[in-house]
Image (cartoon, rainbow, N blue to C red; front, top):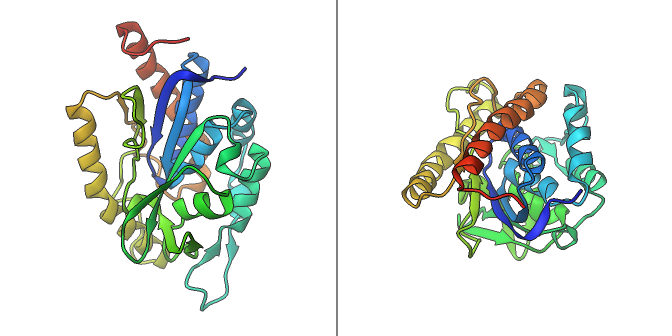
Amino acid sequence: MSFHSKKGYNIALSGGGFRGFSHLGFSKALFDLNIKVKSVSGSSAGAVMSIFLASENFEEIYNKVLEYKTRNYISLLKPLRPGRGALFSADKIIKRIEKLTGVKNLEELNVKTYISTTDFLSGKNYIYSEGSFNTVLKASFTIPGVFPHVNFDNKFLVDGDLSNPLPFEVFKSKKVLCAEVKTSLTGYNVNTLYGSIMHTLELMSNDTINKKIEYIKKHNLPLFSPSVDNIGSISLSKSKLAIQQGYDQAYKFLKKLINKGVIKTN
């Protein structure tokens, strides 16, 4: 059963590392409550989850990802040789996403999809609704130093969280539902290289996401912010927990909005 419709809602998903898996639970709650989706946008982890949400076989993807184990995620991280400017290649991650969705480009998805990226040199935000997963999507979750930057569109593109971690402005309609995963500034071991990189990224994006949340609340847009403080951005073993917590909390949140008449089901 497809829950994509031109009369549906525009969905914006923030970044958040493995906490972003709660977006998959949020998406499943939309599906189960028959809340139609018109278009989606996302940054970083939210970009990946927006791809799943926009896919024709969303429910199949959900069930497969729900069963992933820590070893499945580790197998997708291919270490790079020193001197490459990053720790891992993201190629295996993209190939897995292509396999799950059955497509390779944004234009092939069931609904319009907007992906947030950052030009590493200028710091400017660029949002794409066309392009391959291997360029645009890869760039959106490319944490500098962890994955190599992506050369695309005459730019050095990296993680969208650095410039626009919750890209809801792309929607012309106010019929928007936003999901934001709270930034955790205490979940990293800053004595390690990876921990230092991740902590730096979240420090840089924290102010931006707070300003976005302030705008959303000021304009009374529905904002789902799940409590996933027990899940770190790199908690490989807790993806299933993040999905379940996201689903349980989102179902209650959305059901309340339906009962109040804020959201209509089709």
